[in-house]
Length: 298
Image (tube, rainbow, N blue to C red; front, side, top):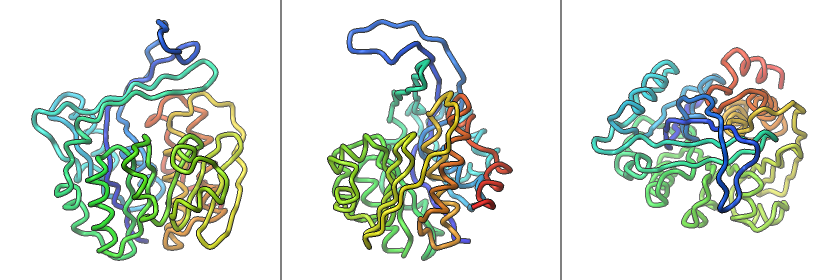
């Protein structure tokens, strides 16, 4: 099976529960929830690894207590080798706001992620071979992301991008990837619509739009379109669901040179449902045993 190189961020997450997401000017009471490792890069790397893919994570943390906790957690997952320690930089932090109705919003710093320069990020691909996957998100600078994409292309890798959070400078990069993962808000930001035509115009070889309870839409450059239904679940916290979906869908597609299809999306939907039924992001990710069963069933 080809390997995956995830070049992204690693952070320390804290969950805050509240009755409803705040509006501008509001002061609200919150209830502190779970705290643990997080960041989209870290979560997606863990989901891929637990689903059976050999993963290298390239990410930066600070030389502080939070960075040490993140590093320990990654060592336990077998992903600690690519973590870069940055002296004088604080480990990134995310505050995950979760409402009583299951909606969420995420506040994140990006000091450590910004410190991951192009040279260091590219060095993380040193052992990559043609056919391996390079997975990126929206947490690194557009310059570093563009440099990693160029190096991955030079090495004959397949490239997947989840441009979240949305950064305007990423728009020209979308057409340079083989697989694009967007949620509804991200699709609206980049394509102005969630229709197959609008998404296909972004130029990626294949794109997946996650639509919450409406399922997930696969759009290919060759004209193919497929809608896969969501798995119904009593949602507790949707924070980690998107990362569980992406990692599991790609792991299921790894056996087909990372080609996404109905089986991949159905596996992703099952993993997302499990994650949404549990509190937290990293803590909610399905286990190796759960993901093995999900992938074997598709």
